[in-house]
Length: 205
Image (cartoon, rainbow, N blue to C red):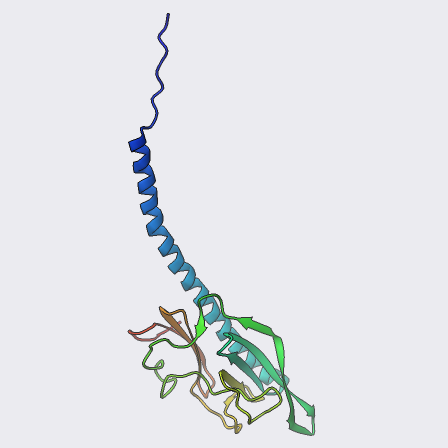
């Protein structure tokens, strides 16, 4: 009679070693995956802002009307707005109308520049968000707290609240470890930048 073969299995010690190794691998992989995801989120938001700024510049010239990027620093949202006059005879009377809806920054991303001490080269004298937006029914007064606006005139040139061409516009976003900036010069040149949250120089994207 043929002897029955004994099927060998894994011992408890071997199973514990495998579980331990899997735990170590997961402990390394999860933080790396989270860091990568956070990097993709802020990069996507930065690109969305840069694209909307470029769109506002083109739309101002095509519609022969003022446009602006309106950032709400408190709710971490931004939107493209077009100035619609009440009467063509008086273009200073009217209201800002949202064009295309409101975009919210992704989870973990906020408007700000963390601990960055200085702006990108040849963009601003002192680092900071663009000037406050005026009210939705105001063209050049009634600044609104916790907002930042980049305004273009009907030729696609960035202007201040007096309607004068200006440079030094910027919108900064951060996730705590990186900072992205979208800047607009008086020429107007729209550029995107990246830097660490505290040290190192700005790198144009």
